[in-house]
Length: 165
Image (cartoon, rainbow, N blue to C red; front, side):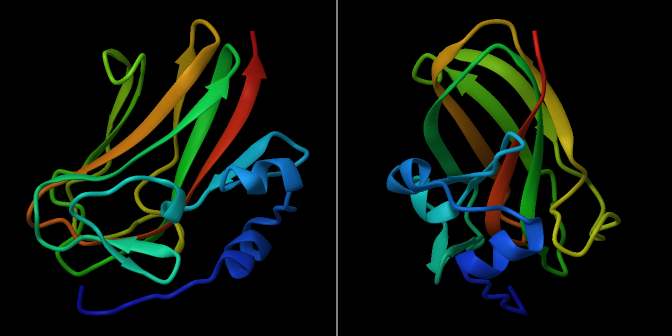
């Protein structure tokens, strides 16, 4: 990326109005009482990303920038916000998907954008999106796939339960 944004965990939590939950912190996941969960990139796996502080940046390689954190979630509707910044080349075909059962069961696939501009808020990568869990899962995985032209600096993923069903 041409520009590097280094944001520490406390700053991200302050921006999002999140409070740390000591049990969640042990798993590397911060939780808010209103049902929002902040997942930091350091708690996700990556084979192609560059870790800079607590962020994860693309490196010009194609593949999954990050995957994990293998969470237990109950049935319901959830909203996802990818927090970070987009470089000049943009999202270039990047997508996110939600899977479980060791990646064998696809739950949702979300194209992030095809424009080089971040038309939403400064700290959001693409638009927020939602998915529905038909049943409780014990190993929910959020994966972010990038092309060799995608430029993202990922600071965190906010997962919020919108409705229990």
